[in-house]
Image 1 (tube, rainbow, N blue to C red):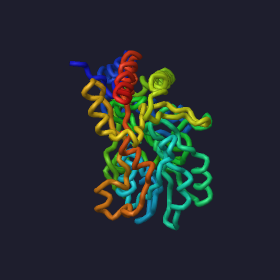
Image 2: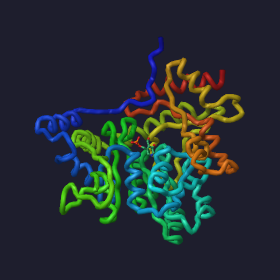
Image 3: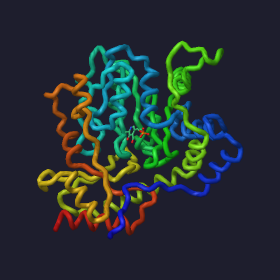
Amino acid sequence: MTPMIPVNEPLLGEREAEYMMECLHTGWISSAGRFIAEFESRWAEYCGMRYGVAVSNGTVALEVAVRCLDLQPGAEVIMPTFTIISCAQAVVYAGGVPVVVDSGPRTWTMDVGQIEDKITARTRAIMPVHIYGHPVDMDPVRTLAKKYNLRIIEDAAEAHGAEYHGQKCGGLGDISCFSFYANKIITTGEGGMVLTNSANYAEKARSLRNLCFRPERRFYHTELGHNYRLTNLQAAIGLAQLERIDELVTLKRRMAAVYNEGLGRVPGLTLPVEEPWATNVYWMYGILLDETLGFDATDFAQRLKKRGVDTRPFFLPMHQQPVFHRMGLFPRGEAYPVAERLGKYGLYLPSGLAITDSQIAYVCDVVRSELTG
Ligand SMILES: Cc1ncc(COP(=O)(O)O)c(C=O)c1O
């Protein structure tokens, strides 16, 4: 039987083990210890932000970020429909309303030209999401935020090290969020972080992460929070990973170059792009099938799996989620054709940091032969 090429395999080294062992030997295994503070400050500094607040995953990073805004009931947050449910549910949990726009056909990130039409008197924030490692075109987002006095919550969960006009993603808004799940460019197993330049947001995020204990009197509460703490063990891995971020980003960009070379002339495919103003970190190497091929990404994924190539489908857009229809969100008549096409015909190929050139060559051969017969 052909061995399966996994869609992701993390790259963990000796330094990660050394730092983990330090936690075990010193007993600092919960959410206090030197690695947490160091990971927070070093990651914030890398992204060009003042404060970092480490949390248990990227989903709760978004929840904390949205709660920092103190939304009034019914306040609206504009985001792409083509994203993970974590974005929309963070707004719903905070009592707000997610409002969506379509994706651009080239970068698959939110079509920033559609945002202004969606702004109402209730709009409070814009949530750009850097999809699969490619930055959103942030200047128009920032212009609108200024014009309408809106906050920007940047979801950079897939964009560690990506740049917009030379500035790091995660340093481009009022608050940004990262995930450090095992398939991310920097991983802590499970983990996340909120970054901001605002001392107020940072204090609020720290409080929400830790059950809103009051600093002056423990076990006394004026607000409800969560236990969303990251452990020192996880931060130890994160810090070791962060020390080699340049190498990890180079590996991703190299992987994409090898895929581009292997798939560039295959008919029926749209490949990831890199706009002139962007540094794409190709978190996952996504491909989009032409509708004219006569099959969708689900069929194609099954065919690849039979030949030992594991893949994942693209996101199913938020406006197509039954759970949100039940809540009366996203009226059925609204069409987002680019996102719908991505959801139906998009999938990503094995893209882990540990992937080898010969594995990529094999994946390209399989894709090519499945499409050209
Ligand atoms: C764009 C985006 N935002 C948020 C998340 C949530 O992160 P986590 O899986 O750590 O909860 C993900 C997860 O992959 C993501 O892709």
